Image (cartoon, rainbow over all chains, first blue to last red; front, top):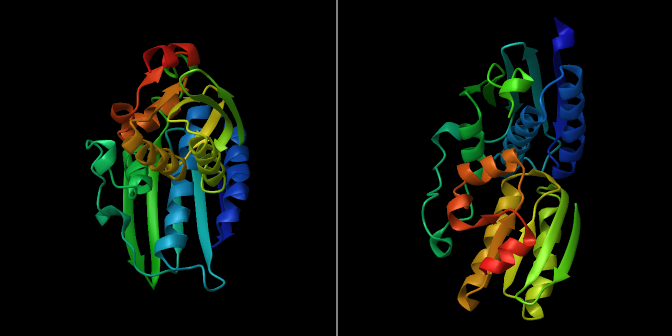
Length: 148
Length: 110
């Protein structure tokens, strides 16, 4: 069911985040997704792509990051693939979110948000590529009554 | 992102409209730094029309809060949407920063 999924590539350039927003918004409209879900999908892709660019050291070359988003009534699944340096987001250090402002580190929040907001997350290094697969369930937010 | 700063007796209220992400967060830091150079130590961020925030936006807020700390200054929030409030909760921001229903209420507590 190709109309239920969208595939695209983004350049390793943070200016691409604007185009990402447009793609996610139109995906949300096509599948009548609640605003909160659109926000979360935009956020996790924003964070994953930003991480790929920063930690994969992709700035230098003409690298592309491939994104595949698939809709099903019960969940949205996303796959992000890049050819940067090996980087497993699942083993990244989690930030200490309970310390006072003075001691609080400023890094690590992006992946912490992704891991907290998604229901499933997998990582695979395959043929010199980083592949991250994530899944967001739609059941809890499926109806307006439950969406408050 | 659109920023509107208003001077109050105890500090500045800053209305943030639109999206606070990697591309726009530096503007927020610049705006706060400008007020801080004028001696402002307290900021109330009015988030009623904030549509989106990523970790880059959170990082900017934290950076400014860290700079305010030595002068006993602080940041607090008002009217975040449900999803923005959830992002604050997950990232530990709700325990570092107070949230109020209105700008007036926030300044009342400052």
